[in-house]
Image (tube, rainbow, N blue to C red; front, side):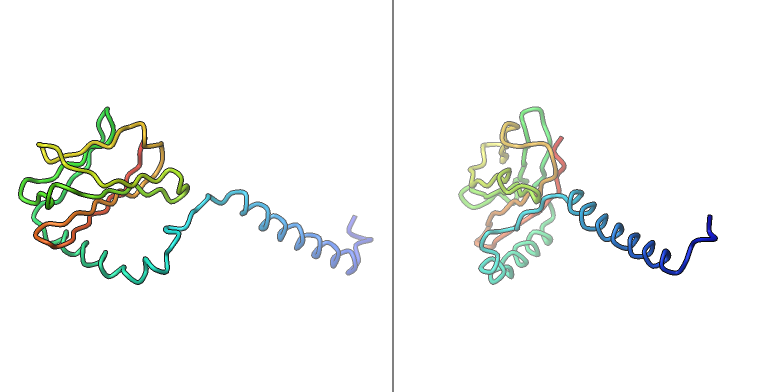
Length: 151
């Protein structure tokens, strides 16, 4: 079998193998990639004010107790400790989805008497989210981020 195998056959075999490998890399990895969206449509402007986000996260790290989220039957419950009630009980939350911007949920809401809000199950789809909670207290901005895997 290898008697008639010459260097020309070897070159053709090597080139054929190389071409098959390149085609596998091109088509195999592009189909296996997950979809990913831009974090923001206006990310250049957002980058310029990112220091505000860093300051808000640092302010939240200094707190003795931070808001907590909890998965319940009705959806997702966010509870604030009594000592850090946001000014005028208003806060912003964002459920950011990296694989599909259409599934993002952004709202400005008002806390109830128990210092909590409930994000209804109907607006949250299965998959990974980043929950960003933003508020101000004593004229200082705060932000807490949680990685959430909604089931």
